[in-house]
Image (cartoon, rainbow, N blue to C red; front, side, top):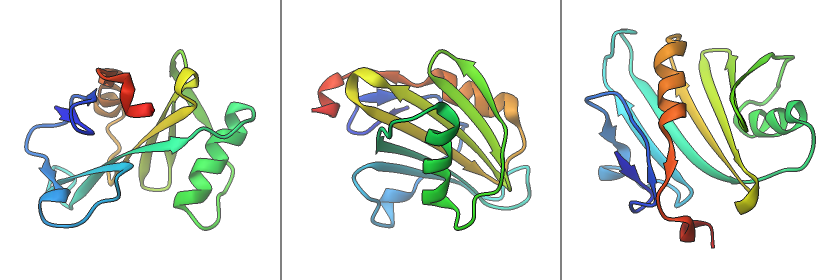
Length: 135
């Protein structure tokens, strides 16, 4: 699926609903809904383009998690591939892909999911098609 005006491509689960069709979504986000999935509750996948903070990867992840959660508790992360990481935090799977040359982080969050294989596949499928998106 092409997102951000076709500048990025990512493989998402079948049946996702583009939330921007019925609700305003910030320009730096793409939000998708999976209604009553196998988790028996709605799931959301949010893809965000974020300014890249400096620091070690643990600090960077903490900064991004702090933007989502009020009180960030200690967490562990896994490296997926070069410049790509995953955190299982509370009821979320969160993927971070760092694009140093664009000074941009892409954060992929998936709530109400514990299927790390599907999530790793989603994060691993992300491709930049048009770098002009980053200015």
